[in-house]
Amino acid sequence: MKKTVKIKQTLIVLSALLSGSSIYAQHDHSSHQKQEMEHSSEHKIGPTFKNEQLTIAYNSYTQINEALAADNAIDAKKRSSQLYELLEGVQGAGVAQQEAKKLSATKSLKEQRDIFVTLSAEMTKVIKDNDISKGEIYITFCPMANNNEGAYWLSNDKEIHNPYLGLEMSKCGSVKEILNAD
Figure 1 (cartoon, rainbow, N blue to C red):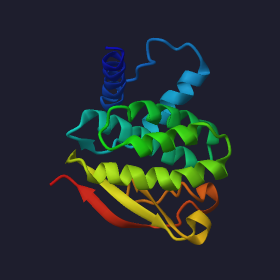
Figure 2 (figure 1 turned 90 degrees about the horizontal axis):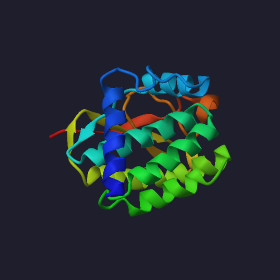
Figure 3 (figure 1 turned 180 degrees about the vertical axis):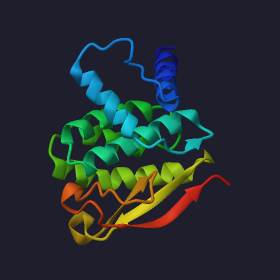
Figure 4 (figure 1 turned 30 degrees about the horizontal axis):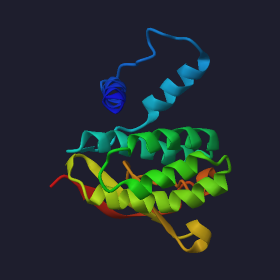
């Protein structure tokens, strides 16, 4: 019952974001909430899946990507904690959930980026095992990431915003595959 309430609350928040309205508009308690709202409005709305919980979880994953691309370890940690909770109950997401938990337990950008390599690989498996009902996902690759072994990540945008090299080399990488609704 508790999980159902949490899922419903998450869906309400996502609905508010998708409709362009702000959940914080009536309750401006602090400048921190304003900053969160501004960050959320910058986030490009991604694809939807037949599994609504996965839609919300994938959105959280892309926010981790954005935080790492912006060299923001604090936000990456926070978003990873959210992803950990959101992946609860998503079939086949157990390893991705554990990677999100690991990422949420560290403050170091380097460690977060190292964990993001595996998190991205696991999220790709989960995404490919589920049906996209609307939109596109770009599977993107950076050859210089992961100690020059290369690494993939998922994105809502064709434009490269590299989570592994951050602001230093934000445009390094290329789209390798596009997933979309059948």
